[in-house]
Amino acid sequence: MLDYANLLGVSAGTLTTAAFVPQALKIWRSKSAKDVSYGMFLIFSTGVLLWLLYGIAIGAAPVIITNVITLALSILIVILKIRYR
Image (cartoon, rainbow, N blue to C red; front, side, top):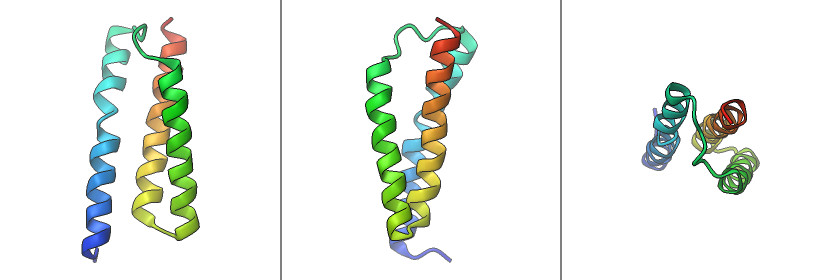
């Protein structure tokens, strides 16, 4: 069972991770990612990687799980941007 702090972490992580799903789907469907910034995704992905490492360092499953998924979605969006140039 999740305590309050972990429930809060899972909720926050789920929402911030889910925020990238509509963008990935839009790129996939439209076959266009011309307005996606490489710079933003490089900075963002670096931040997510650091959050992931932090989560591992403190052993916080909500931080680890949500940042693994967010990093995967971020990488997917960059791959789609490269594919649909």
